[in-house]
Length: 191
Image (cartoon, rainbow, N blue to C red; front, side):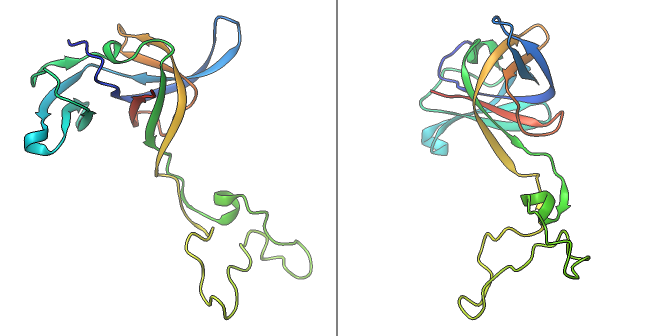
């Protein structure tokens, strides 16, 4: 195991969300993340690859940890979560949101739908008019319409490390993170 302050990112898998209490007896929502030591598979350098990075094994995945300068580490060594994070660190978490399939405008964007009178009994969840007439004569890009909902990358910033349990291989964050249980998460220190 290595202990180096240059590494400020880590990967883990979402376990669960639950409630707990802090020292002031205030209720907190915490997310438990499975964080096992990352095994270094390859060291990328600026001369050959154009940037410094470590290629690490995360479960069945290979991911990169970017570095600002060279780090004396060899393939096969492991990076411990306790050497990257400590309690009360501020972090941001990136994950893939839950996929919700095809959704209409009421579910996807919170539209209120049309009136339930004046002969519009079949238009209650319809979006209504979507554009102008002659000018511009098209529908603007980015218009809120029905479509695929979720299953997109999302970053949550400003979360705090609540607890690190290295025996169980768990990192507890105060707050919620995107994704399904078992989803891969990238955790980065802020500042």
